[in-house]
Image 1 (cartoon, rainbow, N blue to C red):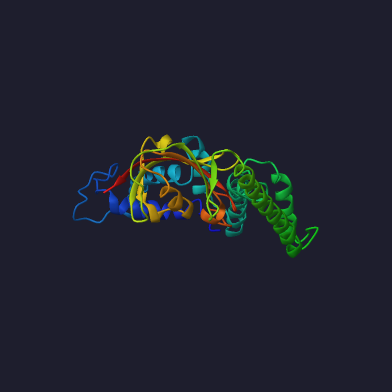
Image 2 (cartoon, rainbow, N blue to C red):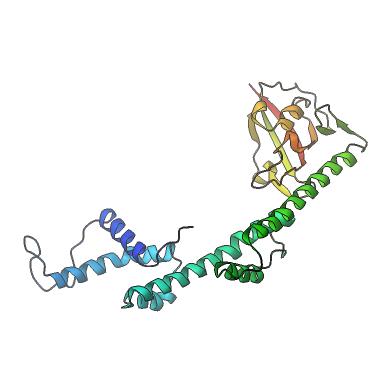
Length: 290
C-alpha cells in the first residue's frame, strides 16, 4: 500500500504543474529595476518563486490532501519544520498509521463484513479488536500464528458461502412450486406477468428492454426504470439466463425471470452480486431493433 508524502510530493507536483500550465506573469514586490535582460538576485527570485507556487499549492493540498484553510497553521508548521530526519520518519510513520486506520474503518471493515456475514454495514468485525490484533501481530505478540488466523478467517468465509448457496437453492425449490412459475431444463424459472403479441427475439437479435434486478432478499442491484431510460443490447451479449429468457418473450411482454447462479454470475459473483446468487428480474421487452 503506497501512501503519499504530506509535503514533498505536494511541493514537487505543484511546482511541475504550476510552471508548465500557467502563463508567466510579471514578478511583484521586486525592488524597482528592469528585470528583462538582467539577472535577478537570489533572495528576490526565491521569494517570487514561493509566491508564484502558492496558488497551485493551495489547490493541491485542498484537493489531494483534504487540507482547508482552517488547517493551514498545522500545514505551515510542517512546511517550516526544522525536524531531524529521524523525527520526520517518526511523524510520517504516525500519519501512515492514521491513514491506514481511516482506510480500515471506511473501506476494509465493510468489505470484510460483507464477505463474512453478507452485509457491509454489519458490526460483526469489531474495529477495536481488529486494531488490537494488528498491533499485537506487528509486535509479534499475537495469541496465535498467521496460519492459524487464516484458517479461522477462511472457515467463516466458507461457512457464509455455503449458507448463501443453500439459501439460493432453497429459494428456487420453493419458487418453482408456485402457481404460474415454469422451470426450463436449464434451471431457469420464469413467470408471465403480461403476454405480448409481437415477434419473438432470436439469439442474433438486438432488443430494447426495461428491467429491474434484485437478489432473493429484495436487495435491488440494477434498474433501468430508476435511470428513466431503456437498455438496448444483443441477446447473446448478456448472462445466459437472460439469453434464454428473452427468446421466450414476445415483444410487449413483461416476465419475471428467476435465474440460478449457473446461468448468472456463478460461484464468485461480482462487485454487487454475492457468490451463488439467484437473480430475480422483472423484464419488459419493449422492441426488437432492426
